[in-house]
Image (tube, rainbow, N blue to C red; front, side, top):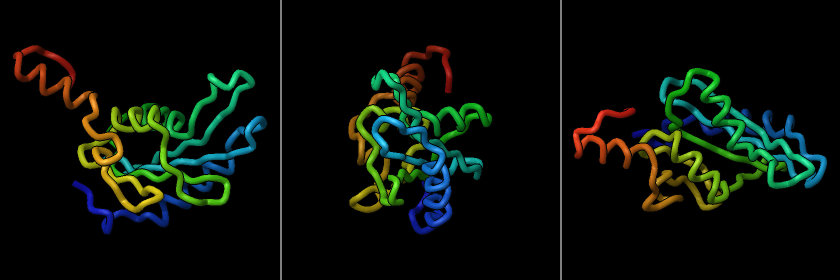
Length: 144
């Protein structure tokens, strides 16, 4: 498990701010950037991309996960999200689920109330770890 003290949060915030500056936000004018370290040491990032039909807007976390997948996959181990002022933002519930899906166990997030694990910000979550545990208990082949 990654410890908060072992993460270069300054680099992660700077990367998130850089992503935020590329956000496409003509409707809300609220840019958001996100960045994360992966389990193999890469940095992935993303920004929000709005759409006139607001429901189709992509959150920064969505584009970050796309960057993760396009870069070869892996698991997220540390994450930060910032607004247009560079202040820390808490991901919404939908994005927490998305992050959980791609997180390493114990992934750290910098939140508005300090460093927390993914399990603290989405308690009792359901995702790949639970599916893998079920498959193992049933001797069912599957992804791991």
